[in-house]
Image (cartoon, rainbow, N blue to C red; front, side):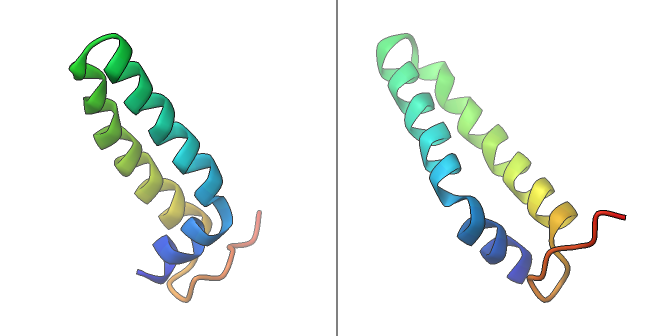
Length: 62
């Protein structure tokens, strides 16, 4: 859980922008764009687990 919190702390502005774009696209085009929000959640979890250790510290690049 610390991984997700640390990643959110470092990149929350980016993820809020992604979500806003998806909501606007779904309002303009079609409700089906809301499915992309689920994909964003999976990507968020993946990058959080890959970039941060269990304590919420960034992993080394090596």
